[in-house]
Length: 281
View 1 (cartoon, rainbow, N blue to C red):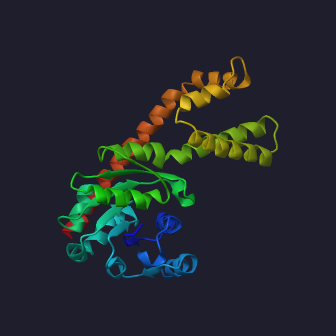
View 2: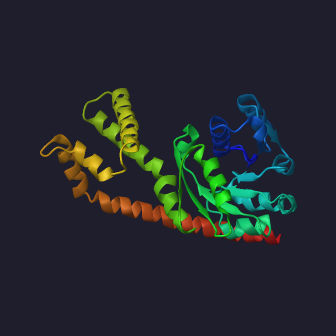
View 3: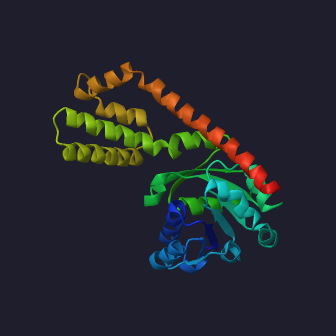
């Protein structure tokens, strides 16, 4: 990526983006980080060789893309403190702060600043994430491409047509790793109860989760076909799948995602109230 990038916040996602951008060809001198923690700044310098500052304005000076990777409750105040700089510099702002709506982000940034919301997931920490992206209509195609390149450094990206759709992204892929981990955990526990030693059961479940993910990624995205290929008529898999279908797993999964999406909407609403207070204080 040729455009200079500033990442505000060096938590897990901020560090993941630093590492991903460097791996994808961004030079260390094209990256800056704003981070209050002395220890985190020292770690960034040691591990990645990038410049980090406790002063966000100093870190963001000259950046064409500013990535907001702070805690959601700090997002509006962080951007508001940079509004004067943004008015002169006109960067693209890409927010990975969960639940903070475009309206609040744009209000904090000031008029005319392009804002993209991004919802990555935890596998981004190992470069295997997927990020849902949304931008209002005024964001240019060039800025959309820049946002894709930044988040694409830690995995895949997919654009969604509305900001509300990011709540579904949160429920599906944002929270999704926990669902797969839970299933693998339950499979290991069941295997142990059926007579396997615990370390062997955990290893089998973990490797099955990993290998199945690789198969799904290498295929043509037809998950139904992949499942059918493992399910021989009258075989062991069919016996297990019949039990899962009998327990109405389909409805359970639908209810789980609906609950997660609703909670995402509730948290966004609460964040919007907090953001309004921060702007008016």
